[in-house]
Image (cartoon, rainbow, N blue to C red; front, side, top):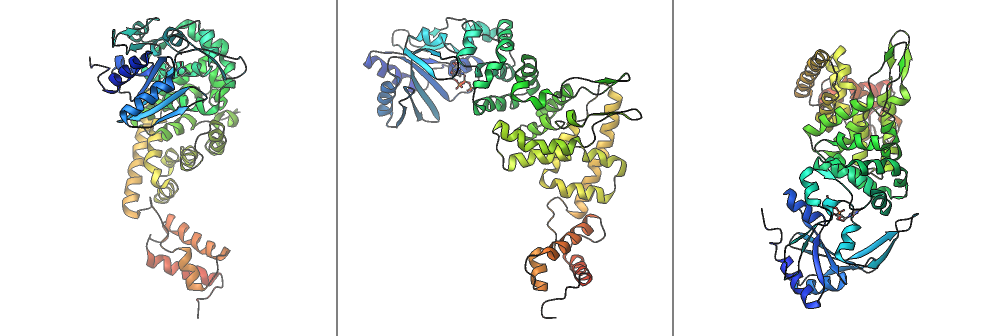
Length: 467
Ligand code: CTP
């Protein structure tokens, strides 16, 4: 196994700590990731003494600046792509109604006790006499081997020190494909409510890591089972369950969503496409309806769902710009490719290409991932239809180049030709041309569009400038 303390920085920290007569250790994620053979560029150094002073000494040897966070007594420096954080070993507890720490100086053992999980509480010594030896009071190495997330102390205590750790446990379980020890999981179920004192930004950082894992459903099933999902993302928790009327049940939308999410995750790392998968059926609970003739329907859930996206992004403090618009668009359009099956006309395909624009391939990926059923015959049938639509889209795109469609006659041209200011008529003419192209009444080219512009302007009683 690679020498974890090979980077020269560790020797330098070790020498400077000896010069100050303090004990220093590498602790946490770096040690865990070393054993997991995962790359790690964040290094945490814990010092039995003043972290800021040691950081300053190390920074002056390296000729870099250390950033000091005096309120927290921590310091950070960057060196050769590594981010190194220094912290004084602490005994720490939090008052019950906030995250404000009450801090006292402590030993490395005290510090290890207040860490979140046994696998994150291991430390390598930087003392010259036992340089590189592992301090592992809670058998984190065994837990790594057994793939178990366990807290060093009674989980009620560890989670009450920082309730975010309940979601971190689930994040690590999803990311590392570990299980959560029963005692810890029971404690999460008992304490789920306490997540409400944690800031949304910290929660969302963890959610993004769950989303980025190979099989995000593993995290969401645990969030659901623990009761956390109902608090942090109730709209998704509501997908859970099946209602039965006159002996007829509908598809269980939570497990379906999980399947779609994993399907998408297996095909792309695009985190926003994964969000679109998680949220694609979010409009179903409020549109669910039972009809004696047709059974269960969710009419308009695509539209209702897309309307819910800005609110969900705001609630989660996710970016409200392009990313949100992309997810909203995919949710809104997610039924459209399959709807084309019954009417694979050129104009239907053109309209879809126009509305999806650049995102058509992502939409098709989501749509394909959305084909799930316990019955393999049904899946095969839908996949066949899907392939037909796919082919049609490719043909129409090759012929008409609609994907990056810009109407060949711009508003500018219309205004110039007729000496008009920006006004309703300009919009009417422009729309008329666009609709005609999408309907296939004229080709997607300048000449035909110009003729149509003239015809429509005449109908509206508008004459050319200077005429
Ligand atoms: N830690 C903790 N409780 C938290 C957050 C962090 O005890 N709520 C400790 C853990 O020992 C963790 C270390 O601080 O290993 C560093 O935390 P962080 O950088 O957030 O996570 P990593 O464990 O490094 O993992 P990742 O890089 O995947 O976020």
